[in-house]
Image (cartoon, rainbow, N blue to C red; front, side, top):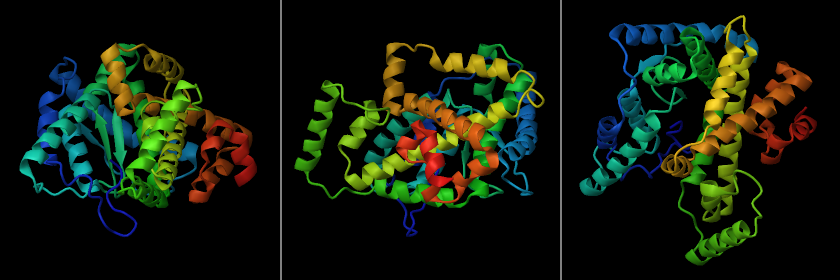
Length: 355
């Protein structure tokens, strides 16, 4: 949901068959209700999240050494249907979708499918920064207050501390993009390749798919990007598309790991119970899911996303510990200084190459 224009100014066409308005409506209808809360609790959470988003900006800029004196934009605090509508609108703009698809029946069918997926995701997402949405800083920070309330109750942690801790992560994403505007263009170019029509004929695709199945049976998968849904995606992609997928995976791993590092680096002076929150949150991430949940998570790439947090944080933690944050920030110089896929697992190789 981060990209809407390609490097040549043209819009993606993959979303023109989707009735995005219907997707938002269906998703809002299907989403589960948030946790039971009094009006007082809801209003308090909304107000406190808005304050926490502003309060997080200073510590994030201090830890990351980025952001300077740029103005602080307000976050938008939403419920689950509000997030679904914002997400469907963002996807419509990103994919070049029309307000009314050419084929009304197809648009409704694909819209219903998309809405169902958004409904599933909506109950788990705590926040999101979209650098291409219409916001004061060229982007928009969304915080989903019912999910924040639900998780802080599950973890049995201080609501004020947890809300600020969540905001530290999402505000870090805002700082990443506002301090380094080229990141969005880099993502645009990679997504443009990834969603373009492949030039390979069917026999080449089938051959790659057969090779994927053969390697999987032989136990030859190397990592998270070689197995599961990501491995299947790579099996049917052309070489340029595989390279673009690698770029997006590495960038996502870096962005999420960097944000997780910042969440913890602010320390107890800002979030007194930061260590307790981190320990309980990690335990929650690792808990077993029912079979249907596991299937949906695999199909939607949720588990791959969680792997990004863990692997990315290890990379950032290692580099910052070795060279400090100022020298780590060389990673944001250009696409050439981003870590390569093998460097995420071996940070010293990135240090040797870039620094």
